[in-house]
Each structure stands twice: as structure tokens, then as C-alpha cells.
Amino acid sequence: AQRNFALQHVETEWVLYLDADERMNDELLASVKNAVGNDKTCQYSIKRKSVAFGQEFNYGVLKPDFVPRLFKTKNVHWVNKVHEKPMCKDELKVLDGYIEHYTYTGWQQYFNKFNQYTTIWAQNAHENGKKVGYFTAYGHAFFSFIQMLLLKKGILDGRLGITLSVYHFMYTLTKYIKLIDLQRGKGK
Image (cartoon, rainbow, N blue to C red):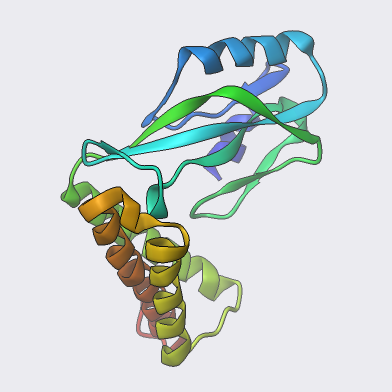
């Protein structure tokens, strides 16, 4: 909602989204200038590398990903309350360079976001009529752990990669348990 509200007040032809904990490298800065200078009707995705607890991650929960962030202002709007995403029909291209995402500086910050995001996710899922039971909640949580630790190779990021995979199990389970509470009228 905040991104869509701000978008109404953008007067430039292009809009670039960065979060407060993200930094662009020099190669990306040049690539953005080039893309805007060419003035094609495209949207652009950017590689994002996560740095948390003083470590850069290459696998698992915080592995590098690609995020669409540069758009023609009139051609984009945002959806979802947690892990919001842009909706844009323009051709998607990838820019050179990357964003460094300084996501967590300590465990207090991690657990504050953990609690905030699981609550928002559960409320949004409940508002959209999503139904779930305990068996499904544990199944999703277990699969998310296996996915992050083994399939996405979180184990290769060492102790922190393994720890974040375990906490991803808990994150997934927590958001579903909060949804179950809302379904039963207990989560207000």
C-alpha cells in the first residue's frame, strides 16, 4: 500500500525501488543510467545479494535472487502485504550489477521481523479465505526446512545457513499456526 501510495506522487517517467537496507554497486548504477537513457518500454530486474549477521550468503534462505525494481512509472503497481511484488506487463530484462541487501544486523532484529511478517502473512491469508490445519502446517514447515537446507544448499553457508534453515521451519510453522488461531477466532 505504501509503494502504491508513493507511486501516485512520482512525476518522473521511470521509477526505481530500493529499500533502506539496500545498496547499489557501481556497475548497477551505470546499468540503470544506460537503461533509462535508452528509454525502451521494459521493466528491469536486479540481482540482490544478502548480507546478514556480517556474512554474505550464497545459498539457502538468503541466497541471491533477482528482483524487478526499475519500471516505467505508469506501468507498475504493487500487490501483497508481505514480500510485496510488482505487477507490470512490460518485457522483463536483467540489469548488470547487483544490490547488496543488508537484511539483519542481529538476532533481535531477525526475531522482530519474524514476528511481524508471520502476523501480517496470517492476517492476509485469513482475509483471503485460506484454510489450513495442523497437519498441513507441519508439512509445509518440514518441506520448507528440507528445501532451504538441502535443495537450496543452505548447508553450504555453514553454521548460519543451517541455523537459518531451522528458523525457516519455525517461520513457516508460526505463520500457519497464527492462521489457525485466526480461523478459530483466537488470533485477534
